[in-house]
Image (cartoon, rainbow, N blue to C red; front, side, top):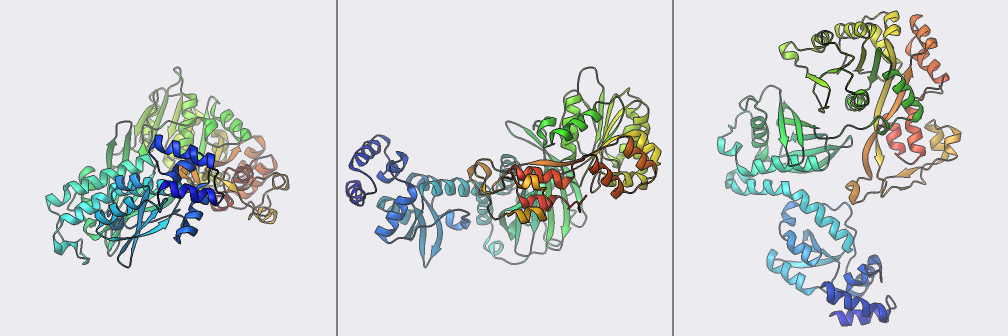
Amino acid sequence: MNSGKLGALLVSKGLITQEQLNAAAQFQSQEKTRLGSSLVQLGHVNENVLISFFSAHYGLQAISLEGLQVPPEVLRLVPKNLCTKHQMIPIGVEEGKLKIAMSDPTNVAAMDDVRFIANMEVAVVLATDTDITKAIAKLFRDQSALGAVSDYTESKSEQTQTNVAVNPSVESIDAPQVDSKPVIKLINNLFLEAIRRKVSDIHIEPFETFSRVRFRIDGSLHEIMKLPIQFRLPVPARIKVMANLDIAEKRLPQDGRIQVRTKSRSVDVRVSLVPTIHGEKVVMRLLDQGGSTPEMTQVGMEPEQLALFQKAAEMPYGMVLVTGPTGSGKTTTLYAALSSLNTADVNISTAEDPVEYTLLGINQVHVKESIGMTFASALRSFLRQDPDIIMVGEIRDQETAEISVKAALTGHMVFSTLHTNDASSTISRLRHMGLEPFLITAAVNLVQAQRLVRMLCPQCKAPDSSVTPEILRDAEMPEELIATAQIMKPKGCDACGNTGYRGRKGIFEVLFLDETLRNLIVKGANSDDIKRQAVQQGMLTLRRSALLKLSRGETTLHEVLNNSRPDGGL
């Protein structure tokens, strides 16, 4: 059907007016687009309405491409430039026919091109221009790394291409295999994609017939691709070469480091390899040294929490302890604090393992326990360097704890981290390390516990009517918050990679040691008693901090329940 017949049909069905058709025809001539696309771009018809019309008129199925997964071998049948030219995407093979999604079923030239290129008959389904554009961008972007997989697989012999299980402890690695260009291309593309998507960790996990690649984005793991069995050996081997590790050693864990540089930034990659029953599992943590350190106002503290933290951090001496599990943002909070205190008249030294960000004007030391450079030895050295502020990456043992306390009691400001569940249990942890209660109260100004919750994408979040007031009460949300709560849910769009979330922020529990709390600690009160007293004095718990973000529509109930414990009526 030509444009004239299609336009006349749309007018006769009352979907557009003759004036709109004339305007679209003129636009079509100027922009060299098809009539349907012109009508949509001019706003004369909704693209969903147009697809519904095409579906009914031509008897074709209309589908949504949200969450579409296309096998790599199918996507390779039609090149990206052809998909973009004709606004279509191959989505599968059924009964010997290539199934393609198109927005314009009258585009016979597109079907002919696909038949010629793929050497297959074509079956057409309908999808909106918007869905197809998103699918082309996502699927062909992901294929940049998968292309390397294809190149490598096709370059191997027929024997290698069969899905026969390989014993990684027996098969040797030859030099051409390790350094073959497809393997290099694959690893490089993985790094580039990970940096683009702000990935914190890359996981490459071997299984019986394939290896799985996953990215950790905003704290959650997402499967990116499955590598054929042929990549089980060369991928870890290539990573070992890059990290200067022993290629021949496949029985013991190995740790290393890779420096990845792009045009715009430098990323430090910490590599860990562990032997499993099917081969070596690789986990790589990406530390973006070019990333900017957030301001204290950006980490997610409530105003009253931020005021207490700044009050403790600006004291002339003492300790500020930030606690939480690995990956809870403790280091980011400390960097933000140090940046706010970093002036020309202050000497700041840090001992870190690893140094995650480079801070201009701050003396940063990388701890290397293998050569005797421990937190304790670095801290002793700092005390001979005329410091004003010291940051110890982590208090792991009694020696480091005692030196930190002595530094705090002799006129220095000390920042450090511990692994505890909440702020009040940090006091018990220090006691178990051998510190006397009177030393703890004399040295510690403030203890802060924190977790990270995913923030909803502001461009696509939507109201969530499924969360009732009863559910919020069960989650311990106060009645005054329930009355005004704006509960939202994730939806997904291009801006957030269709996850519904963009970035993470902290939820916090800030325990400022005033005279009342110090007296409780000296008397030997347990962590529950300390927490109860702090809450009576106005401390926001982790759960209450999370509920505040939930009530403002910044995060979801799922994130609240997953990242904070109930207070139990405190």
